[in-house]
Structures are given as C-alpha cells and as structure tokens.
Amino acid sequence: MLRASSFFAACSLLAGIALQAFGFYFFLFFVTLLYAYHYVLGIPPARLHNARTQAYCAFALWFIFPLSNLLHQWEGMPVRLQQTGESVATATEWTLPLGALLSSPLNNAMLGFAFMLMLVVRLWWNRQYVDASLKVNKRPSFLQFPILQWFTHGLLIASGILLSYCMIQHLTGLDIYAHDYYIGDSKRLAESGYFRAKGFYSHPLTLAGVSLALFSFYWSLFWQQKVNPHLSRAALAIAVMHFVLVILSGSRTSIAVAAGLTLAIPLCQGSLLQRKLSRKSWFLLSTWSLASIALLSLSGVWTRYGDIFSQGFLSSFHRLKFWQVHWTMFADQPLFGHGSAWIADRVRLAYYDNLGFFDLEEKYNAHNIFLEILASIGLLGSLIMLGTLWWWWRTLRPHKITPSAHMRLQAFIASVASSLLHGLTQNTFFDSGVLYVYLYFLLIFFWERFFTLVDAEYSVPSQPQQYTPSKS
Image (cartoon, rainbow, N blue to C red; front, side):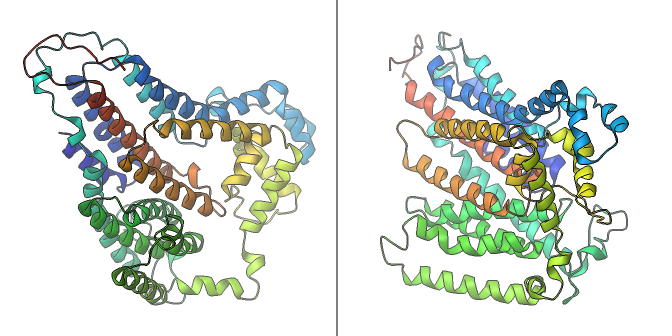
C-alpha cells in the first residue's frame, strides 16, 4: 500500500496545482497515516517532539504574514497610506475584511502540513502503553520501506509524461486547459516560432520553478557516492528530463541557475575536488553541456538571452521597475513592512503611481522573493522568519545522522539553494507549485524518520507477548 501511495503521490506532483494538493493530502499523508496507525502501536513521546517542533515552525512561517496584516490594522495602516499620495478621505476610510487580513502569500498547504504533523503527535502521544500482543507479529520491518525511492520511481514515469507533453506544447502550442486548446501568442518565441512550455501549470515560470527544484535535488542525489545504483540511475534520468523542461520553459534565470548548478553541485560535494572524475563522468558532463547548447539554439530560447543586449532592453525590462517600487516600499517602512494583504489590496498600486509609473500595464509583485518579503513584513518579520527556518533546519538533522539521511539533506539543501537563486527574479516560494515540491519532500522525510524510529525503539518478539518499548 505504501509503495502504491508513494508512486501516485509522485505522479500527482507534476499534474497541476489541484492534483498536487490531492496527492499531498490523500496519497502522501492520509494513506500513509492509515497504514502507520494500523501497525505502529506507539513510540515514546520524546520521539514526537521533533514532529511537534516542525509543526510549530510551519505554522509560524505561514502565520507571520497574517500577523503582520493584523498589526497594521491595529496601528492604523489607512492613515499611513496618506504618505503614498492618496487623498485623506479615501485613505482614512480604507479597511479590509478579516478573511483578507488572515491570508498569507504562502500556500495554505503550509498550514495543512503543520496540522497534519500535530495530528500525528496527537494520535500517537499515549499509544506506547497499548498491549500489542495480537498485532506485533504481523508488523513488517519499516527499514524495508524506502518511501523516497518509491516516490522517485513514480516521479520518473510522471516526468517522462510531462516532458512528452511539454515537447508537444513547445512545438505546436497545444494547451489542454485552454478553451481553444491554444497556449496563446504571448508565449511564442519570436525567433523560432515555437512556444514557451508551461506543462499542466498556469505559467511557464511555475514549470521552471518546479523543474529547477527537482533537477537540483536529483542531480545532487546522483553525484553522491553512497546512493544505491537503482536510485542513482533514476535520479540521473529525472535530472536530465527536468533540465530539459527548464529550457523549454524559456525562463532565463532558471536556465542560468541550472547551468551553474550542473558543475557547482559536483564541486560542492567534493566529487571534483577529492578525487579524479572517471571517463564516464567527464563524458557525461561534456555531453550534457553540448546537448544543452544545442537544445537552447534549436528551441529558440537562446534568443531570449540575446534580447538582454539589444537596444532598449532596460526600458522594456519591467522587473527593474518592480524592484524599484518594492525597495521604496521597504525603505518607507523598514521595520514592520506594509503587510502582504495591504500591499495586494492598494499599497502596491499607490506606490507605482506615486513613483510615476502611471502607464505601466504590468503593476505586478516584486518578482524577487527577498524584496517581496522585506516589503511585506520588514526587517523584524524577516529576522523572525530566518530564526524559524534555522530552528526547522535543526529538527531535520537527527542526532545520529545516517548515510541516507545525509544524502537526502544535501540534496534538499541544493534544491532550496536553486530556488533562492531563482528567487532573485521570481517570487519562488510564494508560488504554490514550487512550495508543494518542498512540502512533498519534507513529508517524505518525516515519514521515513518516523518509521525508522519505530524500528529503533521496538523489537519484534518471536512469540506473542506484552509489547513494551525499550528503555533509551
């Protein structure tokens, strides 16, 4: 059952936002929870503290934005809006409903992740004293349940399907979600006439963010020395497919980040520094580089980099205006920011107009995750967020780290680093498709550690008897 649920969860990860959510809650959590509740009769409460801490961290990261909105409502944000040039009457009458104030730019799946972990803690908190004599003999060894490996095998098939669809979309402009099954001329590349692929997502940048996160994770997994051969081959195949998907999306920043990580990941992990690469490794890197250049040229994506050096590019590069607006917003309220709900409702538009960008049609968010966070919650909120992330990171590192845990943590770090670099020109972690990738991995890590702790704490007796935890 766990093998099938992990497989289908991987397939749903690449099938769009709605199916991402379904796979996350149903396959990856609910089905696994039912299986664990049947077999795992109890673990010491001290072992559940890690899950509870992760739940608190996830909730804190989500709630810091609604808290900022509520603080601005309490201290009188409508009066401060007068500084942006709006009339006194309009500014002082400005209010927001409670639902808007309690919204967060982080997807509600972050909140759901916190509640799911707390549910696990609540269900198992007092189960360690249950008599398991009738069930203990049919409990399998959970060390034989490599959930990440099963998930990877499902992701391999799902990635192949997504790549096939995106190749067709890139060449023909087919979009099965559009009413006329056409992706639109706005996604057409001028030089080649082909289209920027977006897969089953709403925008090519979401596809780029998802594929970049998966590429960096599995590319890191492949270059680590202690990975098993089956997982290594699957990791390489997934990394190749998602590197191609990053190129087909036409995202200049994600392509540059993926190209840099192609060499940076082996270097950082010591594969190039501590020993000489084999001929197969050099052949792989050389072939990878040549094939990437050829694909960039044939797909027409290369011309998007040529546009950077064309005359008038800076005047048409609207991200510079986005950054200027949000930096000004942060400079006006550096300590507490403006609140994400207030920014989305009226503050952002007021700043665009106040800075003279009246005719700009695309008055968007910052397209920079760092500026967006600073403008929303200020320095104080950002420091609280960094502290929460640091505390969460501590919970991901077990006291006695195993080779497999070390392997997946390094891959996870590489993936987060890629999204942070991509976040220089995109609100990566505020994109639901990208955030779900990391929540999937975090839930997989949680379940694998949960089952491993069960095997570490309990032994299976040969005859039915009173089931008691070992003292440790």
